[in-house]
Amino acid sequence: MPTFTPPVEVGPASIGGDQHPLWPHFGNYDVGVTVWRDQNGNYHQSQFPYQGGYVNRHFNHDQVTTDVDDDVESLANAVEVYMGGGVYPITQQQADDLTAAGYGANITP
Image (cartoon, rainbow, N blue to C red):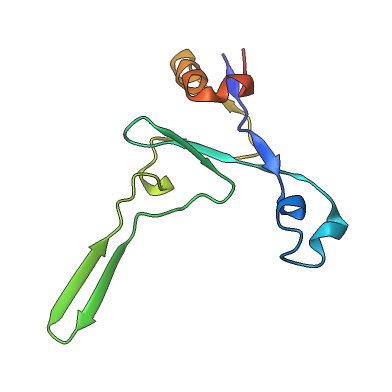
C-alpha cells in the first residue's frame, strides 16, 4: 500500500526574518504543509490552511441577515485532507491523483 507524506517548506525564520527580531536567531527550519482536495477534485496546499465553512447571523431588531461561507478552497469542504508532518496510507487511485497533481515525489510505494 502506498503512503503519502505532505511536502515541507522553509519556516518563517528565512521568509519573514524582518517581521520579528528573534526569528533569525532560531535559523531555518522546515514546516509541514497541509494538502487537501476540494469537492471539484482540485488539490490545494498551505502552511496555514483556511478552516472556513461558517454561518454568520446578524441581528438587527426584527431583521436577521445570514451569511454562509461555502468557500471551496477551505478545509470545511475538503474531501481529503493530509496534515503536514504526517505519513498517510493511501489507495492506488489516490496515489495516481496525487501524482497527477504534482505530488508524485511525496509518494512511496
